[in-house]
Length: 105
Length: 258
Image 1 (cartoon, rainbow over the protein chains, first blue to last red):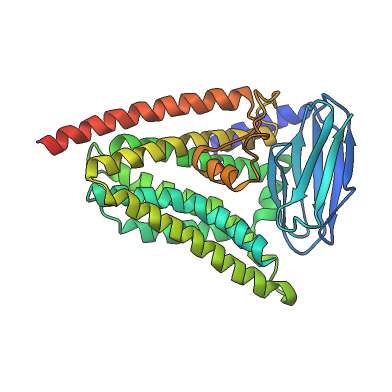
Image 2: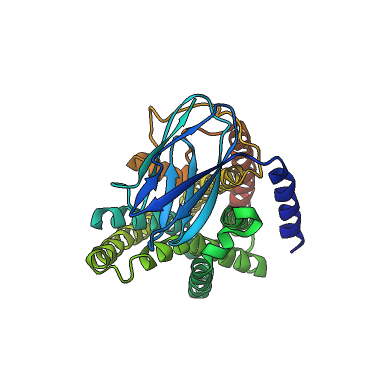
């Protein structure tokens, strides 16, 4: 419990330097928006709202991120700071439809 | 959907099967009891079910990074248990610590990989046109992953005991590094560890999405764009584990000489 409390304190301190939040929704196994523009060299908090009944796994090899988002649930993923470029992401459970790109400018 | 299910379940089962098969082979070589395997399987499966059922609320803990913290903790538990086993399995044959380290290793592997399988399959309950192919694909994927584990087990026990032990300790040393690098990756994703510029980008040579990339991920914790802290921790982990493995092997050689 003590370790969890310390981790929580660290989390609170870290989140005090709040990163800008970008909302992404998953509907009918598609990402909305599918193209996300973010500034270069900036840490961003992605808030992913899975509105489908099925789970989805947000995955991006380029961003080095992977997270299961259960059906009708939300998930938080931090990305960046990143150099300018395009970083594709996809839903591993429905990879044919759930595709998107983070565009860093 | 069938092919996708095969790939997803195979990937999860393969990661667990690798650790389980090596540890079971070590138990066989060292004549250690394997009866707690069933206990670990039941414990890990129950914890995986509890985790999967509560994943929505767990994910939103600690301002949305609860899932990363739990998963990182599971990787660290695996790492610690693996160090205990690398060092002590060949040193002494009867110790409660060894037994609990094996239970910890097995259970953490079952929870880590099992919860994703449960969430994936549960999501399709009630979607009739997809459910059958998801179940069929899951069985095929699990079957292939299980078969690879069985193959690995018999490959290790087919060697003489010293070489079997050498191979097992080598694989466990690599898997320990994989656990460390994956745990750090989760903490970076949760913004607990500050994200750094990648030290290199090897995705042009081996993509993480390729078959080789997936195998290397399970075995070595392969990341095509690792951060400096991950690389340093990985090599320190390899150094630490291999030192323990060498001491363990030397102790085993003395034991079989006597």
